[in-house]
Length: 275
Image 1 (tube, rainbow, N blue to C red):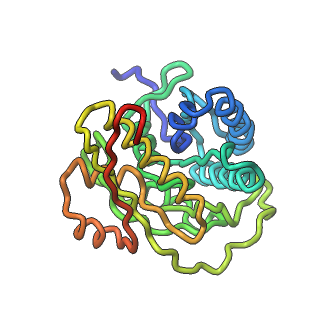
Image 2: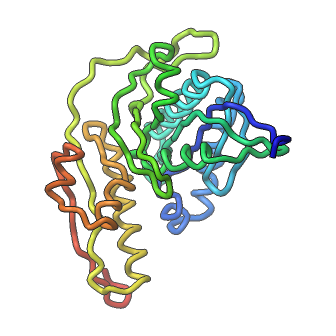
């Protein structure tokens, strides 16, 4: 193993929220919207010195030699996608989430392997729609070096990752974006105001069948996506809400832990094609 090539790198993982649901509704339109978003994302990754080493469907994973450049790429393309969503019809809006982690990884050809890649992907899955979520290793390196507000997002337990991670979030609106030459082209961070926190909890499948379970989870994901379009609300991440069900937590404790103001719950029963 002494001949294994390694490097310290910043890993960016991003994907589209509710992509499977979009594809189910209209494959061709969703594919066109995906290509439109990738035409935004890919150039920013390249502009800030990143290299894409993995893609599958809507997922993109890239690495950067600089954590500052990595965060700047993410804030820029999230800002651009946010602006795209403001000017397109509801069915064409795609919301992205980003996880960023810095770690020592293994290089093999054009691919990168290691636990750091998995952590970046799990951070991305823990995001609220439109959010950029950083590990503490990234936050420590970029603090006071990027023109965006970084907020404490709490300690998260990531799926299939033993250790819990202190995480830090960047606003979905992407305010305070900079170009590579350091010139601001987005308005300065606006005065922050409190946003009520809303959690869409997993609905109960009254039919108790596996197919119905997929439908119920899909409806919940669609609701999370729709609520995330409301700027005045902060939405608790899908993973956190689904962990509540999987770990059989008490709802009161969950709301206290995540400082939740509003909760959406429900039951779904199907009969033939009727819901």
